[in-house]
Length: 149
Image (cartoon, rainbow, N blue to C red; front, top):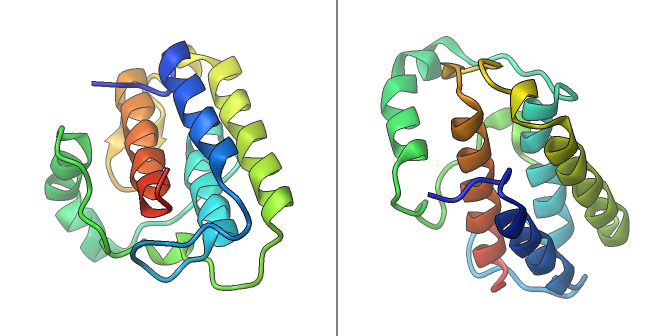
């Protein structure tokens, strides 16, 4: 399974992000393309230490089931609910959000696998470097498909 730590996989995600335009239309969901970039950037920030979140108790109870879905090879279904802390509804500037997410991807990669190996996820507990790399790739892949790239 792919990992954002794999150079070719990361290059593919970056190339797909670079295909996005301010006018790119979603195929499902509520976020526009700039909001989606902000959303993905914030989610990746949990792996770089730039973003911290608190997970509601009821989500922690469901965490083993959710983690199994996140780590499976099956793609996410369109329209899955978004964690409250990662919902973006305000107006965002496309070029700024694109720049920010590309910077954070590079930071994630440059920090390396050792920086996340054993890092605690707010819902799933400690994850391996592979789990962080795979889950981040899967999240980006899902949202890039949402915008047709």
